[in-house]
Amino acid sequence: MSFKRIAITFSLVTFCLYGVLILSLLYFYKGSLFFEIFFSERTLFSIRLSIATATVATVFSMFFAVPSAYALSRYSFFGKKLVDTILELPMIVSPVALGAMVLIFFNTPYGMTIQSNGLQFVFTVYGILLAQFITTAGIATRLVKAAMDEIPQRYEEVAKTLGASPSKTFFNVTLPLSKNGIIAASILTWAKALGEFGATITIAGSMAMKTETIPVAIFMRLASADIEGTVVLVLILIGIGLSILYVVRLFTSKTPYV
Amino acid sequence: MFAGAASKPATEEVVKAFEKKTGVKVNVTFGGSGFVLSQMTLAKKGDIYFPGSSDYMEIAKKRGDIIQETEKYVAYLVPAINVQKGNPKGIKSLADLSRPGVRVAIANPEGVCVGLYAVEIIERNLNSAQKTAFLKNLVNFTESCEKTATAVSLKTVDAVIGWRVFQYWDPERIETIPLKRHEIIRVGYIPIAVSKFTSNRVLAQKFIDFVLSENGKKIFRHYNYFMSPEEAQSWIGQKKPIGGEYEVPKNWIKR
Image 1: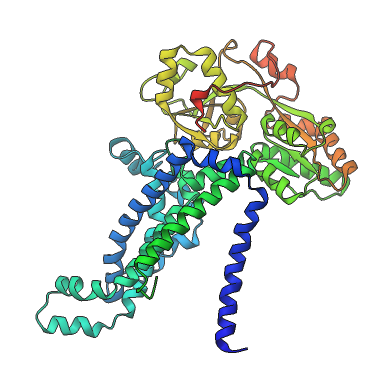
Image 2 (image 1 turned 180 degrees about the vertical axis):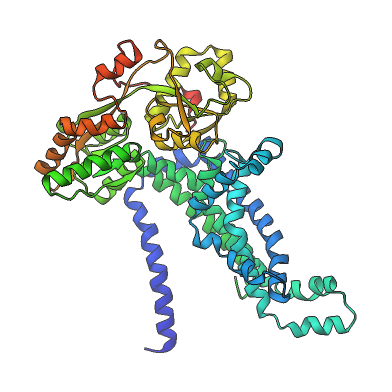
């Protein structure tokens, strides 16, 4: 077997692994239930809420990730290694634990002041945004940094010798060159935010028509021992998530990282 | 055994005592009562189903996931208001939960029985202005019995309508404010039954018998559970129906 075939076989096995999992949902699938659940006011609200919060959280994450990644990729500063390491926190600590950490923070005097005088995060839509932001910001930074590390610094040095300021160099050289990496990081961040569950339910709760995102609704169905309903919502999440990602990929098909 | 996490400390102690007495190792999967029921049905495994409250036993019965005639009531639960230790908001009655600025949670009435009881208590005891104010204060439906207690422990809300026993789960952070006797509509209970998927019905029954024996009851009493309807009713000071069905009004749940 040629090397090409071996590689393709591996990719097909991976595809089949997920494909079988998706197909097995049909074992508990009830067609009539699908439309009833999909078009219910509650599910439509959850879909809108999930897409909106994942998008806003991605914008916030990327807003912090791009400059942070640049700093970590290009500059040396005190505590850099520590900052670099702590970016992995959302991957080491489970989302539920991250959510619990946020709730515990809101129990401290500083946290309580924010809650009573500033924004109310616990059990609100802001809580969903916060949950998705903290679980994605570190990873987004890590992904953008990986893309920026790939760009030879020589391009920036040339721009500087031609008289460009550091900010001009960043906006006119580094940013366009890392565009593909940033798009790829945004897509992964959005996908992770869309499927975020543990921190969301811990911070924002699970109130229908208020803070119930699709992953939370899936858990609530399973926790109500409603397996058929769970299957329908999982199919909805897969359908929405994969089709949006597919469309984005079509529009950015030239980008090698996506 | 698939068990609801709500009675975890007492269940763990009963399991230990049973293992010591019989030498039989009991594997327990704890979780939300509905969640472990889903696990049990999907895995087609498990000898005993021991949910934290009655609602999921009813679902398990309807679906034929348990052997009906083996169902027994283990402990009895009385609804109450639970507040943060020291009662910083000065909540003394059900009507106080409608006061402006009080953050309240109840368990999700769609599936968690303590939430169902809470809705019934509100519907039957508050007038329509108080109900509107209560709904304004209601910030979350918690997804399980134990999360309702945790909401008070973590101070994410000022009060919940939960079980009286919550206070003993976390005595340093939770305080129970009893409801007036006429406000309590019914008493809840914790059931246990042999699963349809059991591979050893005799042994499963032996465990249930042990839980209901004086030894088992002593352990649950140590965790402040009422072990007979009389104990619960004498605490309330009035006879109340045990369990029973209640249909949540449509405005509480959107499908």
